[in-house]
Image (cartoon, rainbow, N blue to C red; front, side):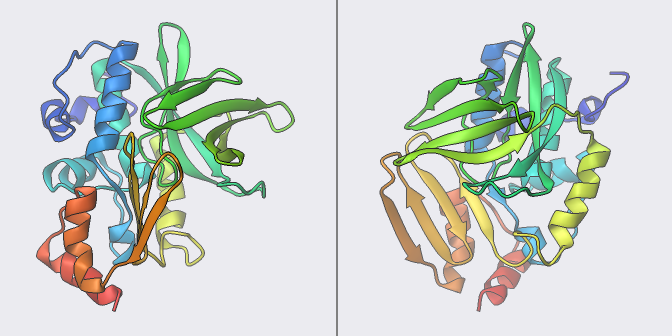
Length: 274
């Protein structure tokens, strides 16, 4: 493949598809996009363990494949969506990177720190993001103002804000729509994400440098681990919350989130939380 932007020409596609349990069609159709997004989200957890442990976060494709495909780890937005973009590119999708400002219910202006993707299928643009650590999409959404979709038990929507020239991804809560993040049309590239990644993975004000953040979305259950607090949330917004002992964390990451740690990292993570 010439002119590869996302490294699709260097991706071990068979290994990636095996990692996410995808055995379907490989033609770049909307159905393929939906199934790839769903399979990736279900199989590779969101986590910032390396950041918490002070490890660097390399974004080169070889490093992403080694960590997330071969070693059974997860990652955060840049890692997830760069690996996913390589797979989409390899399969023949027209894919572009975008950058978002996190809102999570707060309308303060924040820096662009989140990586997401746009894929064009049959002339229509689709938001496809497998690396959001908040309330993550389970499937792509078409970029249509006012579009709403039920995904499992969750409802997501997109709205276009004319005054900010931004699209807003929303989740329907008990008391109405909850803004997750806002993004514009400017294309982003791997080199942009390298700069963003440096700030988010090293700056003391980053939400990821001081505490563990892990998520695994599902159609009827969303699991999150923030620090030592494990939360299981269901679509009716009922929650089970409990504090996890430091020694429990490695086993819980495996059982609840499908994240496998080396012995060294498991011991370091336990020590971090004591």
